[in-house]
Image (cartoon, rainbow, N blue to C red; front, side):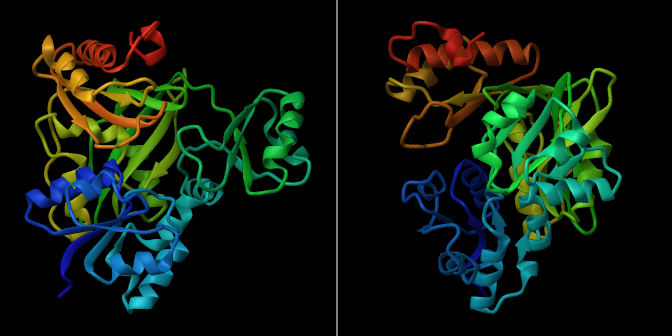
Length: 380
């Protein structure tokens, strides 16, 4: 028997919270990350190593019964090479390598959704002078790096021929796609958990972005469960998936992207009174029965890195000072960089959105030195 139950490729906050869920079940976990002080390494055994290094990945694959991901940017080919090195079969990795390879390439992901009839923006490979893309899609259009982009990185909205020409140095060497611009009214997200015998869905949440990064998550008035499940089935996905969607003014829903792992938009489930996305993630990977899903309305507010910060504990005390029922989750990251997800807080029950925003405002005002304009920090 392998010495560890569950291995994580990646050691950030998603691995940290998944490991905490696994540890409550008595499972032993091991993580791999290039950062020797990663969030996951602070709560359990960890190996320092590059995630694109097959030999480093093999140390996890060779020592854990089941393997899963903290992010979707670890090349599927690297994982396959690591499996071959230690003589293990691909079925020990959730999500599967074919699913991962499809999601990693945003063009392949779009094509898989379209083949399955799942509404999703039309996307075509960006080549030559982009004339074909412009002729088919018109302006505005969206350019995306096929591999590696997230939180708005590797995404360009092009409104006219001048902007297309100005951005040519970014995309002219290849590796980009063009897709139809969606004039959405709001963004939604659904966490889907799928095993060979069962599919479970968390409630549809509305998400608000700030500078292309998720800012607030709260219960939506729409139900996108069916299209989210169809999207996961389209990529033959097993495990947990965050499905991001657009809702247009006419109510039409379309899938923006899939993430084959726990997701920022599912953090509300840590405190809503029911099973969390991390518990379900561990259950799905380990082949355990999924729990019934249900809980109270909850709003999550991200706590983003800021310049000129003091001890974060000042923010913790301030956030709780007027509302002790606020739940604060801090990820243990060493450096506070602008735009970096340092933690989040949840407000549960009545007026959750108002309370979450107010608590985050108190957190920032106590944490950041010399705040001149709280609106710059996302404080409403």
